[in-house]
Image (cartoon, rainbow, N blue to C red; front, side, top):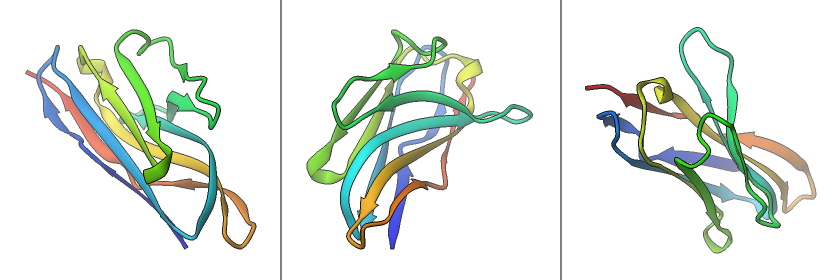
Length: 120
């Protein structure tokens, strides 16, 4: 069984910063790509940032220059550093991991999400 658990969300003023973490645990053999997605009320879920095992990151245009994705492979953890936050960044942020389990199953796992609210 594999679990992804996010942390670090909260309420922040415009221009502020937050750092999200997502830790994967359980019967994991290897992790390929890890990513962060967000969904605001009334909107579809959208990709925020992606980091493959090779380390070449990808960002949504709306967050380039403000957000940074990174990962600690030893801890099976992915991070999202969010700077200069804007009200339009308000959403539930979820992480995912494309991984292989010890049993050889390749699957895309999701966390439950953490709320980020940017408001004065």
